[in-house]
Length: 199
Image (cartoon, rainbow, N blue to C red; front, side, top):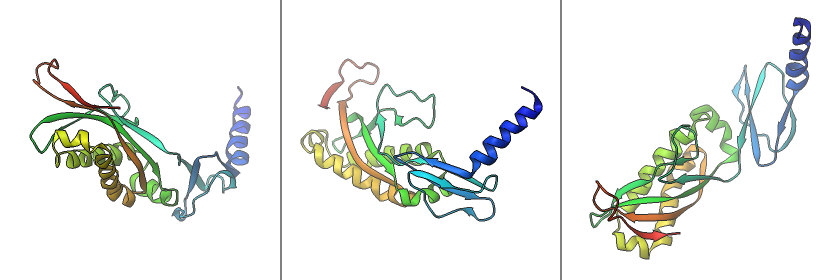
């Protein structure tokens, strides 16, 4: 490709294409204006105008996302939607291993604050550390037997605890679902581990 073709291609992409923001369904967009910073207006699905070069658009997925807590989770990507299993000591001093899912989404009206204050890495900065902390906090207050008997109440309490912190950050927890709880035995071997709760 000749230099003049490259310049024309860049001009078409950046100037002509730079006038528009295409926001697909289930997403919202925010604008960074080089003169005024991140604008407070949130654009919903559709085609919107912006000033090329002067304004930069950022798309956010506003759909419900699943954050999976599982023994098989791979940490290769820090921003992957998941975490390793969580080990917790219960009130009756039993070590248990928890797996489950957190259903969350961004608060559309707070997308500019998320972009400005947290950035794109809200999974590693907010979701993962807060979920570990709140799940451990809730489960440490009950016995291993109560966990099986009061599963629904435990899930609701974890959801409420997560929302208490998520809401200020522009995130909404739609639910917490336990998938497996294991009573851990000897740390050197997994032979005496016992599943006390399963999906």
